[in-house]
Image (cartoon, rainbow, N blue to C red; front, side):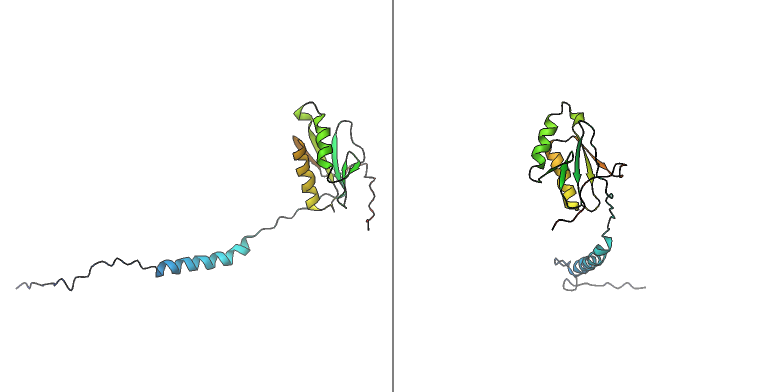
Length: 153
């Protein structure tokens, strides 16, 4: 057997290309983009929240702070109607009179038809006023509220 020598000329040798081929990268990115665009709306989840029904309290124990909201969004501090702009100021004064941090507890009694924005306003205002703890009354009490339920025009 004779061995043949294969002679490869330098012109036939292929050198590695220094160019980056981005076509596969673009294909993968576009597929991922389409997947995220299709799947993102399906991932949204709604949480059902049910506000308590008519749980406004009629009598407040001595020394206890109770913020009530009726269905019209009116704010009551220990059964005294107050304007929304005075809410934080009056509550701050009442909390400042408390001697210890443990006594700075504010309870909330909210009508089930009160707007969510009003409830958040009341909770945030209590925190701004210096309340150390917030409590929500969720079950109607035996003594039903005496607030007017007439719609104001």
